Image 1 (cartoon, helix red, strand yellow):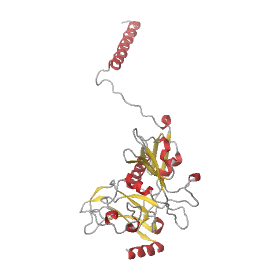
Image 2 (cartoon, one colour):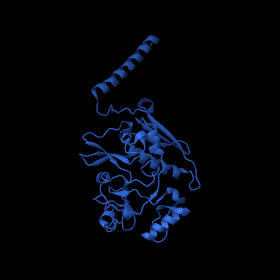
Image 3 (cartoon, one colour):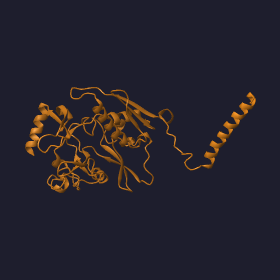
Image 4 (cartoon, one colour):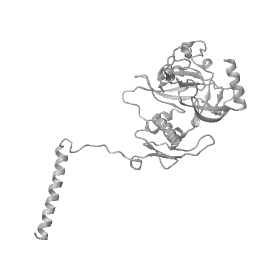
Length: 319
């Protein structure tokens, strides 16, 4: 076979294969072609990429377990942002890479994903708000004391939507001297000029009685990163004045202490009147629930500063 004829045969075979592949696409033979939506990366779709580096402290070291716990916490915070198809993964031994497609505000993303959790201690019964908008320390159906779930349990709480409406009715409760703790910044007013913190905002779907978004520090943050409410929702932005907060009921447990629901849809309205904060504790360390009746689940052990110890003793004595 001549060289020219051999090349002609090869070209013919290639042409037949190309034609056959085109036929599969055009005719749509079942199983031959499967459509797949193209997923755009940050370079094409835009967004924010955050890199966090874990550093050891006197109370904890950087290891695989601690990094994985941090990733899980970040994942929950990203879910609250409503970001579609986020990527959270380890990058190296002690780094965490967070990619947020379509997010436009780097500052907002950094604040929500990487913020440090704050610890507050409340004297429960005197601060739980009942249906009439005032504290009801002796009403067990409000505090949960005479229910199967106990104080702060899921039995006495209300859906988050109802809790927001209950909290909305309360007037501002301002401390004697405004501070940057809690839900009020020094010198801030209800107009929230320059984005100062004055209470919290929630975005509601009044038609389906659902909380779509929140809490946020400003109304604008409810719509950050081009957030769009679901189709059919009747949207209403609700402001809760400083001095009132909403908290979820504690996890539901069996009689043996086994957690069966970590995040019940049950909420309480509280006076934002913490007796102690995280600055009043010392040497927090992870421990485990051991001893008689212990199930080996992790807990947190800590001590108090001199001021914290005095306040804690006074509160528990009064109780």
